[in-house]
Length: 364
Ligand code: SF4
Image (cartoon, rainbow, N blue to C red; front, side, top):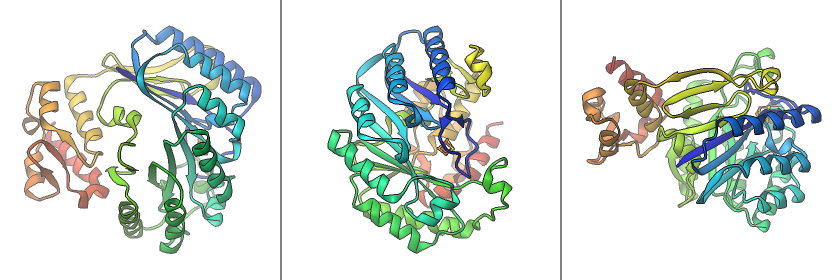
């Protein structure tokens, strides 16, 4: 079974930190885009059973009801498994009950909401256009209509946050029925409004302190920390994202989307004009066994449970210890081997990049 990612690169508003592939919403462009998307899917999808679909962006919820209907019609092309997970990303300010009903009618069973913060000043700094009350109303409406597998994307590492603002956010979270939370650290990227406005980043020590604080609080609230930035209630891990972290194959459709199919990783054009003209692929590369094993390490060790040694052996026909200098990291206690899995010691998960770089260098 495979997964599908569909990129909808349109937004009503541009957030100050964002360097994703996105364009201002324009009705005609979206219509043309959907036509090209349909063609791309019909051309490249070869009919396998699909077990997760993720519509991300951009802001998929910026589309009108009619455009969303057209998108769901396109998605009918896929042959879906019985227990498939179907996620769509939404922004609170462009959702309403009519759209939620449409999602429900089209079997969307998971919604991921871009929240980032409930704090007015932080939302202003990030140039987000929703209010705390809009988020709460959306979550309540989703639950009422029967979509209760809800993720919220949150952000930390913002230079005007402190333990009090984090606590206020976590207190609101504790009162809502949210099954999954992603807490990402703000990364200052060039070509963003924050960068142009000379935003000063919060120092790393404070970032780390805040990350630990969030992890502990979410644990107290009953969330399982299962990936560096992801937390879920029991039974609500993101199946779609696990496809990536387990280094499994998935289709990527849409302008700027990435995919991994038949052992080929590819990237689509980031140019909207080219995409609409049906010139889809920017580049593609066949994966060697070595690259696949390196990706397995880089992605798999993002999970707190790490990599199952038997699964690795079955997939690559070689012992994981033979390829990577894991022993060194077990000896200095930055990694753990529990007999079945090898994983990064949770105490060091925040600095896992350094460990990953070391492991990859050891395989050269
Ligand atoms: S963060 Fe999301 S909503 Fe904001 S501009 Fe980027 S893609 Fe659009």
